[in-house]
Length: 372
Image (cartoon, rainbow, N blue to C red; front, side, top):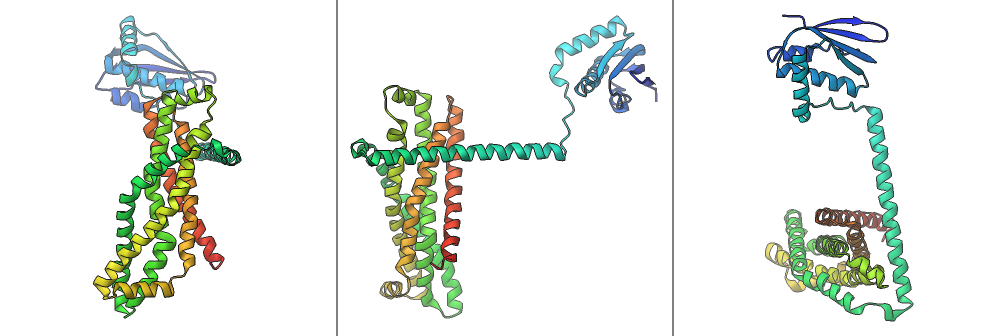
């Protein structure tokens, strides 16, 4: 195998005497030699002894030069024939995109820096949302002192869009939840001859935890995305700026009607979800365990305490505030491009569902620890 490099290393410079044929047949040897691997400051490539060079050899040299320059090494070539010089110049002009640099190393320090930047970004996002929520609460309190500022028509519109129009999907989802709980419970309880306890299981699980959370997740998927998209489109078409110019506050006109609508709608939807889920449980109890509707209702009144229903209803308006604020907050983050509408709409749904589940878990653990 022909020798391609001869090194002449001095304290201040590394002279690399190139030899042989720099053609496509030896490109792998040229790139794999790494004779310049320890060069720190300056490298001089002497091409006076190169017998021939084709396009592959010229590209190999350009790649070597790029790698060294990325490392901060000064590169110089000497003794190169004019024909090879023209070939290298031609390849340099027409093959810039083919010269891939070596990706930077990713060690512990780089990972720590990335982690720090991500943590800072999350903290800033949290502070920004808290500031937005604080502004919304201040606007709500200010509006309550001046009831004539409340936009009842807009609130009713969003109450219809977010609450009334969501009834079909809420009913179907809650019914399926009740059926699933009862069916899975019925299989296990029948083994122990404890059929009648299906009432407590369905009643407590549906009213206290599952129905409120499922309703909140469905509303988060519908309303958070709708709020973000509506406000985002208004930003793109400069309607928000026009409102500010005319003296109309975005808080009173865009945020509060949506927040109030969900605060009112959520408890009603959860109450409906409770009833439908229990009805689904009654159907399964009658079909699988032979428990009649009358027996189910009598047992429900005797064993399921009112506090479980109240806890579910108390969580509902808080879910509504979380969903509405996240949807509006992401809507105001949409910039002047249609691409950001899809991006922040998706983010709003993901954020709303996550915080609904997180709040429900926190609330559940807290009440259980308090013995409620």
